[in-house]
Amino acid sequence: MYLFKKISTLRQFLEHYRNKNRLIGFVPTMGALHEGHLSLVRQSLETTQCTVCSIFVNPTQFNESTDLEKYPRTPAKDLTMLYEVGCHAVFMPSAEEVYPPGLDTSVNLDFGALAQPMEGRFRPGHFHGVAQVVKRLLDIVEPGRLFMGQKDYQQFLIIRYMAEALSLPTEVVMCPIVREKNGLAMSSRNQRLSPEQREQAAALYQALRHASRWAEEFPPREVERKALEQLHQPGLEPEYFQLVDGNTLQPVEDYESPASIIACAALWTGGVRLIDNLILKG
Ligand code: AMP
Image (tube, rainbow, N blue to C red):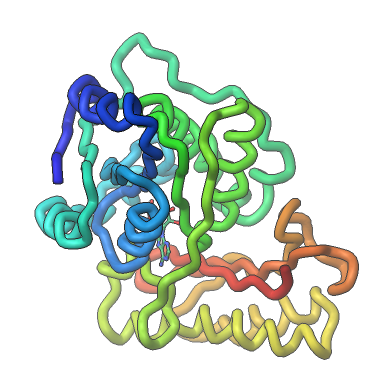
């Protein structure tokens, strides 16, 4: 495994693969890696010929400076994990390398209704930061495939939309959510929770599972109400729980007309914000 901190040397390395028409797979991350990240790397290793994983805590996607400061960082452990899984190259750039003074890296794309609900509502500006860093990294790595987690479903839709809108030569692949034994979706942020808080946070997944059952009996708004009611317990502060169209992210009114339905939720526990989702249809 090779570790690159500079764009120029990473591109030199990738040139060998490109010259031989090898497919390059790319997994962007913010580090503090866990099995969820590794599942993306494995999927890339299985379906491409060269896997690049980036580790970069992107300042432009944090809407609260304390969240950025508290974001877990475990670079040595991350490198060991990537080495053991067989990743070919790791890109760990500095902020100056990604955002050199004078270079306009902003993405001027209107994500319309995709960016407005849920994460867009509670984290203003977040998706523009995400689009900015992913576009910049795609310009650097130029992968044939980009691997993203279903865990951040809205992010996946936005990046897929960007790839299509800008005609990028990259296929955006969604990978399933990897969970702890108790159902809690793996997340770097879980590291900031105590074992008790992790147990309690599993209520998020339980509410999603219940919602999938309730959907057989109750209309969407009623399912959302019941789920939020279940999540309103001491120690948990739910932010939203929504049943949305899996393509447009607009609230669903019934279960028949949309081709895809997804339940999405966010909550705070122990000062940590967690998100999760479950595909109900499609
Ligand atoms: P992050 O480091 O949180 O920015 O995540 C990097 C990538 O890993 C994103 O595409 C996430 O959606 C994905 N990811 C994070 N957690 C999980 C998980 N539990 N299962 C699958 N993919 C995940």
